[in-house]
Length: 503
Image (cartoon, rainbow, N blue to C red; front, side, top):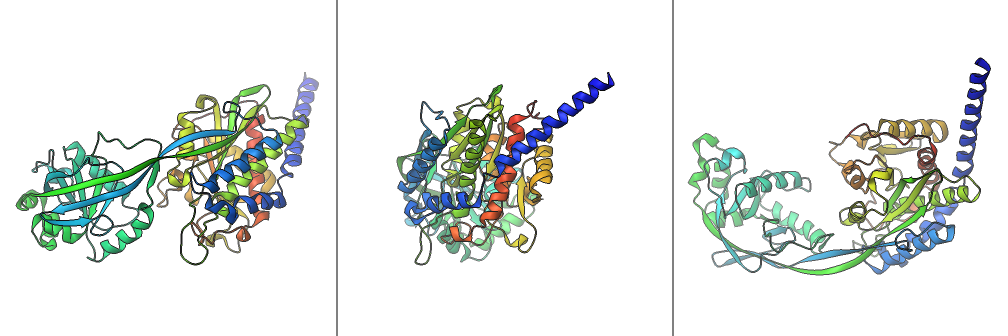
C-alpha cells in the first residue's frame, strides 16, 4: 500500500512538473518584439484613435479579426469573428431653460445631463427643496413639479450624490430636477466649459432614449438662474438651505415657474466586438474569457498632434490578448491544447461606458453559467509615477471579490514564474478612483463571474495624444502578459473549476 501511495505521489509530481514545463515553454512565445510589431500598427496615426464606430476602429477590428484567423482561432459568431452591435448616438440639440422671457442656453448658464427629449417646451411649477433630503420633503409638495436642489460644489465625482437626490425627487413625484451648486459664482461657467468638451460630441448607449419617460435627465444651473427662478438673492436660498429643517425654512421660498426644452439629435452607430475561440478538450463546455478593449477616444486635443492613439489605453491590453491567443493556439497545434475552452475577446465601446462587454453579457455566445472567469487586461504597458525606480509591478483588481481560489491561483503563479509586485491599492471597492467598476471586467463581475483586472495605473499621458508607442516598456509588457498567461493556463487545465464562494 505504501509503495502504491508513493508511486501515485511520484506520478502526480511528474505531472505537475510537466505542466509547469509546458506553461514555461509557451509563455516564452510572448515576446516584446511581437507585442511591439502589433502595437505599432494598432496605435498608429492611420487608425485615427480608434473611436467607437469610426473608420479607424473598424480598421483595428479588421486587423484583429485577420490575426485571429491567421493563428487558427475559430470564428464563433455565425462563422464570423465579428459580434455586430448597434449603438444609439445622442447629441445635444436645442436645449434651454426659460424663466419669464429670459432664455438660458445649454453649456452656458445651464447644463443638461441626460439623453431624453422633452417633446417640446415643458412648463412646470418649481419648488426649492434645499439639499433634497427626506426632512426637506416632509413639508413640501413636489408632485408633478420641478425641484431645485442644492449641492456644495461641482465636480466630476458628484454623480453618486446627484443620482441619489434625483432618485428621491422622482419618488416624491417630481418631473424634473434642477441642481444649483455653492462655491464661487464663476465656478459654473468654468465647469460648463469643461463639460462641453465631453458632452457636446454626444453619447452612445445600447438602448434608444425612452421618449415616454422624460424624467431621466436633469439640469445643472448657474446661481444667477436659481436666483431668477425664485426672485431671491442666492444668499437667501443658501440661508434657507442651511437653517434648521424643523423651522421649515424652505416653505418661505415661494414656488415659481420654469420652462425648459430638451431636443436631441439621434442616429445609429454600428460597431463590433471581435472574438476568437479556442475549443478545449475534455472540459470544453467551460469557458475562460481573456478580454481587452480595442477602442479609444479618437481625434481631439490641444497642440499639433490631435490623434489619441491610445498605445497604453488599451492598445497594450489588446496586443497582449493577441499574444496569449497565439501562445495557446500554438500549444494546441503541438498537442497541448487547453482542457477548457478559451474565448479571446477584444471589445468595443469601453470608453463610452463599457458598452461592448455589456452587450456580450446580455447576448453571450457561450452561457455565463459556463464562464469560469474573465481575465481583463486594460493598460499594462507603462509605469505610473508611484512606481518609478521600483521593482516591476502590476495593479491587480478584483481577484478576491468572487473566488478565493482565483486569487490564490493568481498569487501562486506569479510567485512561481514572474515575481511581479502585485499592487492591490485599487482593489478596494470604495477607493475614490473606483477602478473596480471602470473596465470591462465589471460587466462579468456583476453577473457573478470571477474576474481579475490587470492595470498599470494612471499616468500623465492618460487620454492624451501623448499616449504613444514610444513610451511603452515592452519588456515589462511581455512580463505582465506572461503573468496573465500562467493564471489562464492553470484555469484552463486544472481538474476542478474554480468555486464562486463570494458575492
